[in-house]
Image (cartoon, rainbow, N blue to C red; front, side):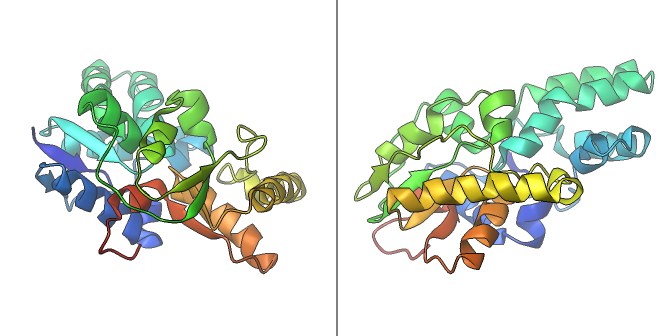
Length: 246
């Protein structure tokens, strides 16, 4: 299987360890992972902000870059959600049915990390070791758009040494939502306060999620509270072993 890493903009620019951990994990499971250097933004930011015409070029480019691969894996439910549920609509809006067919086909081969591990590889125990108290935040796009359900939790429960604790009101949004946090700052801050309060109530050392964007938002809130709780991407926990230090 030819597997490509779809790193995403945020991982590339700010959270490269999440992308590296995805590669480390997949290679440990016996897969060769390619990193197509020509990849750019998938266009989600433009689409969600109303710049659908400008997103067409990005959608076409994304399709051109990743089409040769059997599977495309990203450490982001948000970006995978855009590829699956927005790209074909953008192509059809432009009247480009050929591109629409290509994007629809690519969408069937594009996976969020936990989906790929469980639904494609059939693996729950990835050989990870992480002796820390951890709580998990299910991000909105993974929960509501991709419907990954309990897959991340099933993977976390199989990690050796972990003390996995339930997050109260876990399905409540953290308040990020991309530009939502900028355009609706007061509402976003209130939602974040609820989320950080629930995280602190667990006594966890680490808050994990499948999207770096939400972890960035939550991490900022925890930092302002001078909390020692660490935000850490799901991929970094799953990639951790006895000799590693995520």
